[in-house]
Image 1: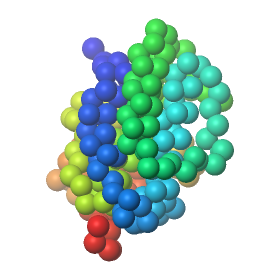
Image 2 (image 1 turned 90 degrees about the vertical axis):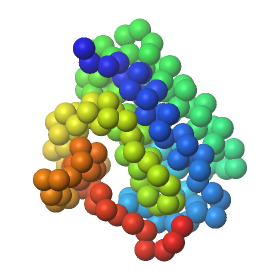
Image 3 (image 1 turned 135 degrees about the horizontal axis):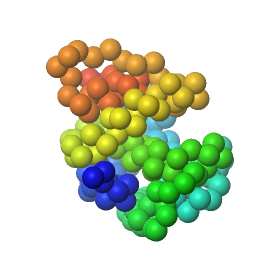
Length: 192
């Protein structure tokens, strides 16, 4: 039996929230594995993603094109509240059924995208700020199939980069990161 998206999001949140809470103000300008974002910009982007995927769970229309809100000092509390909202939205009856979003994608696929953003961007932020992070095996396993299927479309939309080459000894999570175009060995060039 496949885990519900809400269950996987709850598991991912347990690993992600310590990273999000662990970002210090003096780290906000540090680079991340997402070249277009510094730490603050990536936090803002992830917050926008979390709020938009709540709307998508309810079969509403999201607006990823709007400028991301610039988070302030209350970001830890706001992340905790919005991630709880995300979990609740995907736990609602019918959230995983049918199609959702402007692209009319299967709702389960869209929920997996939310899960992937939370897990992968938490890794980005952990790497950028020198924190430990390893998502749960159930989260990685659920994302493996989805990301492989989504990768061609994600690349045409510039959401994923070209696959990063990894060896056969790569862990499942390293392979997942590589599928998105990330170097699993990425480290900041400045100390955190």
